[in-house]
Image (cartoon, rainbow, N blue to C red; front, side):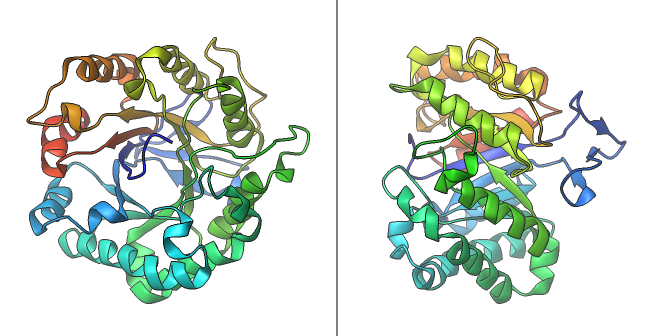
Length: 334
C-alpha cells in the first residue's frame, strides 16, 4: 500500500438518500446493528503512532485547536510488535495510550479511534488467529485509560487493513480469513465494546484493480461489518488512474460500491455509509506547492466537494502537521 505511515482526516455529516437525517446531524438506522442511532458527525485526523512520537507540544496543540473532532490512531504492521498479543500490549498499547492522553489533556471533547495492529499483504496469514489478540489488546487499553476516557473519548475502532488479502469465494466471503477477522471483530466492537467500526481500504489499482474493487463491495455492501467505509481513490499518488475518482464518486452517490464504470459490484444489503478519502502529502504542504500534485489534489476537491457536508470524507496527509492543518485541512472544513 502507498503508505507505511498514515495520517488521515475524516468528516462524516451524513445526509444520504438511503437514510434519514435529524436536525442534529444524526442518522437513524432502523433495523440495523443493535438498532442504534449512529452519530454521523466525524471530522477527524488519524495519527500513525510512529509519527506521534515525534510530535512537539505545539503539534499536539495545533491538533487540539483544529477543526478536527475525531482522532484515528493507527499502529504499524503486526510484525513491529512481534505479531503477538504480548507485543501488542507491551510495545504498542503504551504508544496509543500516550496519544490518547496527549489529546484528551488538551481537548476534553476529543473523540478517538483506536487502530488495530496493521495487517498487510506481507503478513495477512496472521488474520486467522488474530481475533482474540486484537480484542484483548483493545480491552487492555480500555482498562489502562479508565472508564471516564473510554466512555467520553473513545469513539470507535479502526480496522487497520487496507485491502482484502487472499482468495475470496463470493458465495461464502467469510471463508476468507481477513474478512472473517473483520466480521468477528465487528461483533465484539459493537456488542462487547459498544463502539463504532471504521475501515479505509484503497480502491483498485495495479494488475487486478477490478478484483480489489469487488472485494471492497462485498465487504461494504453484503455484510453489516462496518459503520463507515471510506475509500482511497489513490489517484493523487498515480496520475494514470484518474478514473478511480469516478468510481469512488459513483460509490458515494449510490451508497453502493461501484466499479470505475459506475456499475454496482453487488446488491446493497448493509447499513454501511460510504465516503471518499481526500489524499495529499508533503508535496503540497507549505512551504511546498508542486504543480502536478496540486492539480491532482484540486481534482479531488472538485470531484467530491458536493459531499463535503453529508458523507464521510477522509484526508490522508504527511509533512508538517501544523502546516497541513493550516494550509489544507482546516480550510477544507470551513
